[in-house]
Length: 185
Image (tube, rainbow, N blue to C red; front, side, top):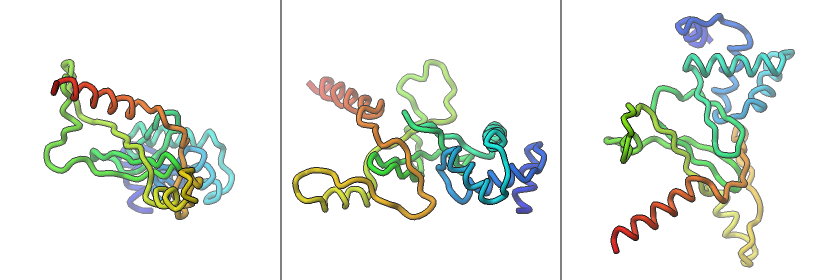
């Protein structure tokens, strides 16, 4: 609590019960939505307006104490892992999100083929797929090729909209594969 108080003051913010509760909720449940954080804060400190939670999330994000992640067609998520270049994996089936460190050494994600004169300092990469539990659940189905549904994960995991079959990342990978194939011909 003392470190959190000092952190808020170092960033020029007043120390309030709302901000402390929001930071605690995000720390306890990384990748949570604002609604999830609102519920956790209410459970922790009682009466607080939804707007106060949203305001705290906004200020803490603006000051760099939290990071806002916006997966395609999904609600924004928040985490307190800031100041490094990491990415995320999201399960299409159950919505579980986990952190993935960027490539070690040279960071290819920060080296664009054409930077158009921009000075690139951050890349946001979201990998989509299925988590190990959902892969096992799918392969354990009755053998007719149908999916068995989502998997329940441990408390603290959060869900995103699993309807991501036509994501930009998928389309980009397909296009890049076609272009690479055409260059070889």
